Image 1: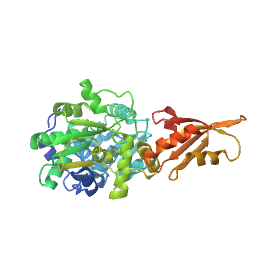
Image 2 (image 1 turned 30 degrees about the vertical axis):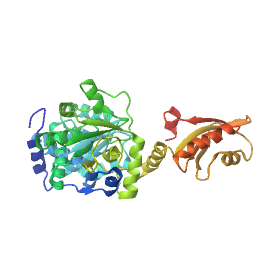
Image 3 (image 1 turned 180 degrees about the horizontal axis):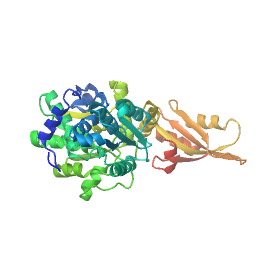
Image 4 (image 1 turned 60 degrees about the horizontal axis):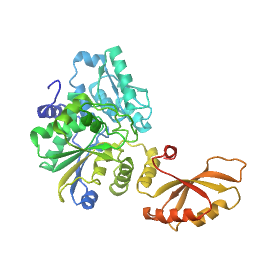
Amino acid sequence: MSAQRPDAADVVAAARRFAGVIQPSPLQRNERLSQRYDLDVWLKREDLHKVRSYKGRGAYNLLSNLSAEERERGVVCASAGNHGQGVAFACASLGISARVYLPRTTPRQKRERVASLGGKFVHIVVEGETYDEAAAAAYTHAQATGMTLVPAFDDPRTIAGQGTVIKEVIEQLGHAPDAVIVPVGGGGLLAGTLVWLRETHPEVTVIGAEPLGATSMAAALEHGEPVDLDHLDPFVDGAAVRKVGQHTFAVVNDQRPRLVAVPEGQICVEMLDLYQSDGIISEPAGALATTTLGLPLGLKPGSTVVCILSGGNNDVSRYAEIVERALVFEGRKHYFLVEFPQEPGALRRFLDDILGPDDDITLFEYVKRNNRETGPALVGIELGAPENLEAMLKRMSAVPHRIERVPPDSPLFTFVV
């Protein structure tokens, strides 16, 4: 393997290396998405692996390439959750000790899965608020101990392992698709996809889907090198990377696939559709590819499109936030600061005057109580339909209350959602 750039032969070698250990994930046609977008949509179900994501591929390929001495010293990695599970699985399979650094924002479900998959071979350290802070701690530990650092994405061996996903897709489909949509965090999966397709099927359109709040690959391409994002939204934790890797950037920069930024609220809507319509539990990063179908991509009707559903490690406790974000994105959930007269029946009169027949109040909380005649309250209203908003705002303008709408980009909004 080249020190800088893996090729299709490396992808083939990776697939052979973990044959019998990591089984091919299913490729399933999705009728809901095919009908909705007038396309032939297939889902590559990486969420159905034992580690519930594609991350075991790259981790196993890298670890199986280590020397006997490197295996004896052990390995260290940082992860938002999925990479840690991949490393834990690979270490348990190969008998290698690992130290896994997870940021405090990692969902409990992912922490528990890392421990379960790694067993006696894995020691978990929770440190830092973001993946990048955990990565810095892992790097420092590796430098101090001589343990091998296992990057989440930025290593040619990792990239080659992730490239086996698209290799399987074409084998299962029996031909190359017209387009493949790949979720993008640090760029390992995207780079692996490009490495394989460049030599085997260069005609395939590759679309990289980044979370709107974490467009680190787009920023790297714009600046001509990996750069740190000034702001990072950690909601899509499996793809919330502040800076992409040098190896992944080199591959992506060479081929320049189309990149799209996907709003987090729209991802939440698709997560709920996957769950309610398809019975698929997807994490936010796992829903990136299918959410992208709802954006203007310019694909011809009837095109065969493969969406890589990259992971299903979603903590059930997050669904309340997911539902909330989805409602806000769809324009059905709104928040207001309302100054109420502090007298009996004030709230009832407000609701009678403001709410439509299909609307509902979902939150009422006094922001500040005092001895004045009026007091401000935070009021959350869920509309029966988004188009009801204009009529409700008109009714609000006619009542004597002082009402201020809390827009989604307001700092106050972050305390609500």
